Length: 167
Ligand SMILES: [Zn+2]
Image (cartoon, rainbow, N blue to C red; front, side, top):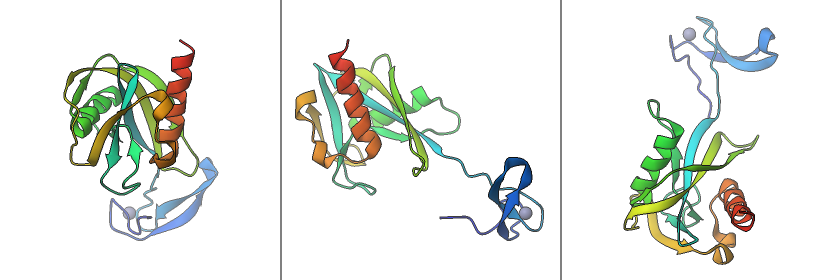
């Protein structure tokens, strides 16, 4: 959904061709403010224990009822790694060890860039937080492929399996 009004002066925004950048952007007709719309960063973790991945079944939209790993928006004032640790604590109540970057998932049609880490569970007892109706461990050969939440979920778990097979 697009903004209609200028964030600085409240004037009307109108799509205009910005010559220097060779693309159309919403520009304020009153003060000239240019609205830059960029993807947001999502931090995710596949928490592992004994070769299995801890996933959660989403209780909220989007993708309600589907499985994914803990992930959420990075806040201003924290690093991507800090967000990954925080989201894991909030969503499945476990503490994780050292983070190892799995991959970055970015799609033209998606408004988010998802950075996914692998990590080992070092503490806590997995349980549901506010966003999950169920949490469970899955072995690589028993993942719920037909019930995964997002394209990035699917591709990250595929990359995890690939990594397990080639280490
Ligand atoms: Zn303005």
